[in-house]
Image 1 (cartoon, rainbow, N blue to C red):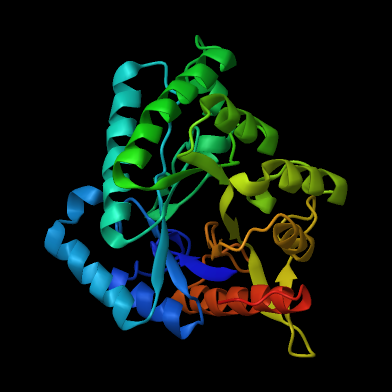
Image 2: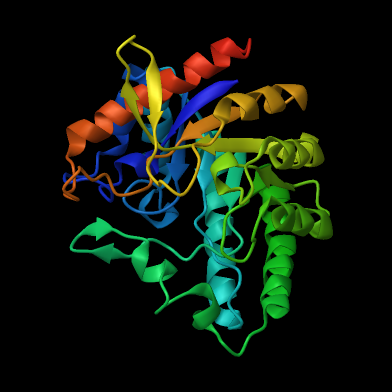
Length: 317
């Protein structure tokens, strides 16, 4: 199993400080012990509009110079709008991201069903503006039923699956809200589209029910459809030197990544686990922390998952 760093971690959204350049992220990932980099297919690092053939060649050279792979590009798409022009723009972007993935040597393009985006507030990212009561998935288009939006997504997935075939890129639908309520909705969409080019990115933190029975059911049902996955959170070093996970939400249990990794081994998954730092980094006074803290989290996260892989009898490449 291989560990990658997701470039959104250094997009300048979650901490006080600048976004790193692509070259800086690659160097940081290599120094922190990661084997690869997952590229966010939007600005500032991976928008296809910004990257001509020369830029893509330089990116490949940078990765090669540090001995890193680029396993995945993230699409950040929303196929759920009832407005055709919205969906067509999204599909066009996904096609260009699939082209970019192929140009950079990636094997996977990660998709959402209905990603709401990350708005900026005072120059920093926040989910509050798209997950609150004032603006939500349900309020976007109150005249559109959930079933209608489900079918919009399904039709778009059928069309972009052809882009996957065109460029030789496997599309991985992530089990992420809002349209897909849990992993089973994501699995159902993949099954209904029924294309060999559309598979799944099953992520443990995105599961509504994380008891062992539910997680086992998810993993064994998805099985060979699993082609990519993520882990997240914040970490600290304990008194004995081991890296421990920090509980961020007192109402939610810590994801049991150790058990998830055991299940991944059981279903034969030997692909990538990407660390994504994708939430505001705040201190005890609810002030944004700086870039140094993000660096620390990137290092500790890799070490944390390596600990779990070792305990599970797995080797991180």
